Length: 108
Image 1: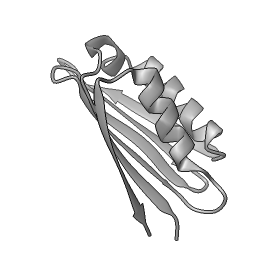
Image 2 (image 1 turned 90 degrees about the vertical axis):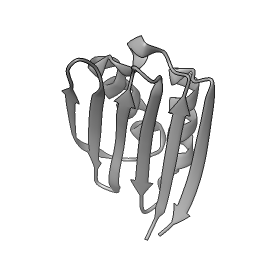
Image 3 (image 1 turned 135 degrees about the vertical axis):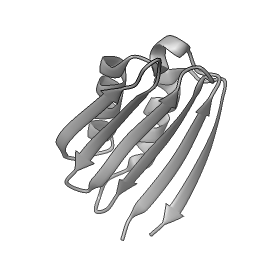
């Protein structure tokens, strides 16, 4: 079916994880660099903090959920076809500038 990457980020900047527009741009860049086709992007900022961004892709989806008060985020990238979702993961890791991360690949 496809590749499903689960990326957990730790030790991230509060400001990066609490900025909806920054995260939308980051998710869009990660999706496009992976070779995916973005159909729709939606986001929600929570009070007092936290953001969720979901990108609907022709190839499946990409999402990020953040806990700025903990400096943590969870990213999901699932694609089928010729996409290279690992590239998207690498971009997110580099741009978020986390202190530590875990990355798991599930072949579906």
